[in-house]
Length: 368
Image (cartoon, rainbow, N blue to C red):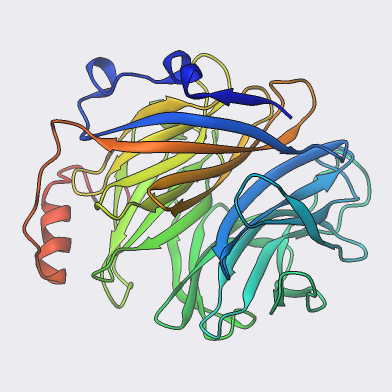
């Protein structure tokens, strides 16, 4: 196990000023622990707090792309001592990029990619599987929710519905579709061709307390088209969307995730490439449609795919990295503090807030 205490923060904390622009929040590393490394390759994490415990999930396999991908689930009461709770597999499929969420009836839902791969390091169309548990240990038989070729990468529950975005994971174009489901198994198209500029892929959705929906989108390089991350915004009924390019600093922002703190700040995490691949914590200004890097976590090489949980005034971030040779799973504990730039904002009604956000994005259009 590798532990780095808060003194290491000075090595990784990037001042929230200058080249990255002033932001109203600072992030400090308390500690980082390696929590799992038993498989040859351990990667693609997510993290949730459920039933008074922490649950971390990730893929195990021979390598980054292999036929034997399985999903491991760890549990912990205190985020210090972790034990294996379950190992999920589906015959004939490489399972990957697992995500956890809590269903309206209180069960834990596992969703992830499923690729019918025939050989290691061979590309294959990817679909999506789902499985459910009432105790974190016993899981329903994994079943396909989206067939290979479209990958529903992540879902977020809002008002008893699961929303998620599929992207092309085969040969049929490069575009996003917004899906919705009442049971987490059967999904319907809510907005077809949600976005199709560049090569959009992994998308995480989050809902504000006033039901505004935000989308953080990874894009990959495709010839001369932009590969910078995107921020989308929509109000109910989530049919009309506006988009903002977050800039070339966030090209290929792999494994995008974000969370709103109790004080209202939005923090994001994903893979950045400046100075070499690493997992970074960023400040996301949803009103201005901008993002600024705050912190480089101890990471490098094959890395990213963070899970994020806020608990007891602490931000917990799971991620994977190969900076200590073997590709392993890490958990960071972070302190988040406001700076002198913090502003207190008066509450606004939903329609006024969405209008305000869009009005501050002069570059926005449905097809940037």
